[in-house]
Length: 285
Image 1 (tube, rainbow, N blue to C red):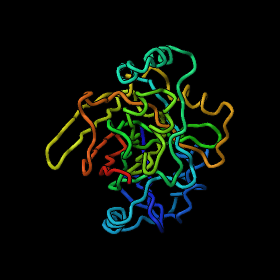
Image 2 (cartoon, rainbow, N blue to C red):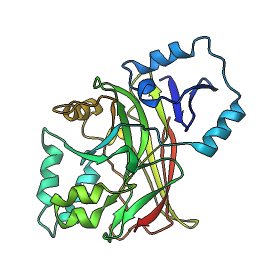
Image 3 (cartoon, helix red, strand yellow):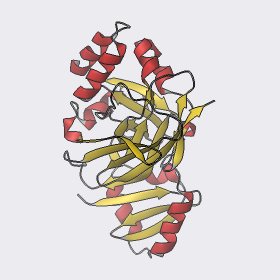
Image 4 (tube, rainbow, N blue to C red):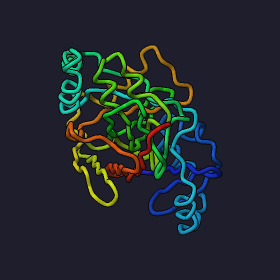
């Protein structure tokens, strides 16, 4: 698999290919929303002069933004067996456990709206937990960038912040458990590849309170029950995305039921080939 990484900053798009950085005008939508993106970027790079690597890395370190402009963020649920089990546990008292059991084996996947661009945080930016929630966790997810044509053109790291107490109280509260200010993290870049990301790709998540690690685990994306294209095909049934969209593909890394996020916790999510997304946690007031 050959790779290109695109970093979004306020003034420039920085493209990293074969250990070199190249700069492009900061028109995110038109640059990324192209079918066959990997080959088109190679054409864009032909004859282009690389920029100074130290200068590029300084820009990224100082002004990196989430890799999104006008794209909506959607998410898939219960795509891993562990997620099915966790959802059943949290909703058992409310009588909702059977819904998660059924959707795991159903033909139609669970898909839900996650965030508008303004509610998305980037690398080293803050994500929120709700003030009216008592049980909150991050959900680390491989996130697809899908063009307006319905083709998977890239990948990024996703942090699907979730209120387990609200969703567990009643499955109909899912939108409130999932959609609120700074409810999602994306970054640090958009990975563009010439072939699909391999099934042995590893997702790792660690949660720190101060310098004490509260949780750490990993999983390969091969544990997903559904294929990426299957999820995309269902998402595009009845929906159009003029500038493309993002689709989080579900989680398998779920902290123990006794754990909940607190202010100033730090969430680090790494996915092979893409990089690491770091978010600090604060309560939304």
